[in-house]
Image 1 (cartoon, rainbow, N blue to C red):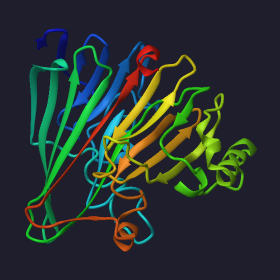
Image 2 (image 1 turned 30 degrees about the vertical axis):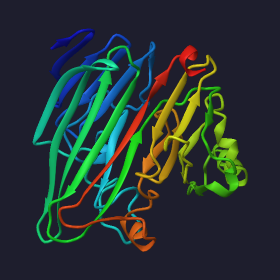
Image 3 (image 1 turned 90 degrees about the horizontal axis):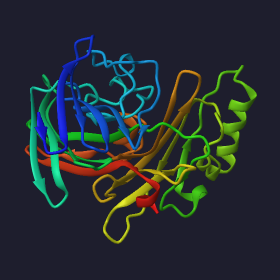
Image 4 (image 1 turned 180 degrees about the vertical axis):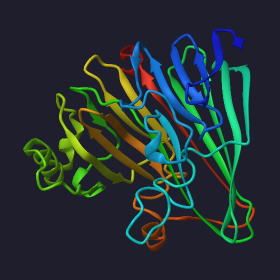
Amino acid sequence: MRHGDIVVHAFRYPAGVAALEIENGAGRTVLLPFQGQQIWDAEFGGRRLTMQTWFDQPLPTRDYLATYGAFFLHCGGTAMGNPGPEDDHPLHGELPNMPYERAQLAFGSGTEGDWVELSGLASERRAFSHYFEMRPRLRLAAGESAFDVGFEVENKGGSVLPFFYLGHINFRPANGAVITDGLIDDCGEIALRRAVLAPDAPEDVRAFHDAIAAHPAYHRHIGQDQRVEPEMVMTMRPPADADGWAEARQIHEDGSVDFVRHRPSELPYSVRWMTRSADRQALGFSLPASAPPDGRKAGLANGQAIMLAPGARLGAQMRFGMEQAEAAS
């Protein structure tokens, strides 16, 4: 399909997963319309934004770690984050690789110029437990290097649904880059989940985790090929600006910027996640979330689940992508 400068090709990966490749004059992206409505890959400004893993294609499974490498995934549902000792839910809940019953590709024009939008419907049902519908939407305008993403979830069941959400946006960390946001006091406003290291962990890995535990601001400067294993996880409550948005950035040495914007009134938390090794290069410098990623039991105990009454709906929106140095300044 073609709409002005926007060209969309439909194809299947060798593993069988259906995909849409979109070129919009600023770059290209690959969406998975029937598997989680993920953004599998994104490349803008001649730079690949997507995290690096050893997965060269998405695989047809709902197992989170068995198909790993997307640029963006909806996470959550009845749970979100790492299951705790008393949890039995899958890692990051039901949403990441959820099969979609319907997918729709729409084209239009507006103040932002020509655009293409992917939307869809997926249902999660479990007898004697829960029933909800997920309706995401993703818009990309011609010549733009950022996505507008939103979702609406509806409780279709007959009882209250405790719901969790996290937008997993996985950039590639850049050597020499700096992470910025609206937080003022790192020590008071960043909650670090202390990594559990193996007894034989390399000294440089142990030194990194010790440094951010003592001074959280240390993580803001991306070192040259700094190893971060197994991962760094932080949770924050970002402040909103005058327009109600919170923004975080990865500023590259050439002045270009990766950014994430969301409304804390909709998703009050932001999770920061990084892992760097010979096999992985990933930086989620702002993952908008309804709760810390500590699993269902912790979220319920801490009053962080969103309690959706029967028939109630919940929605949120985000904008993320990159800007060239001229626009970012």
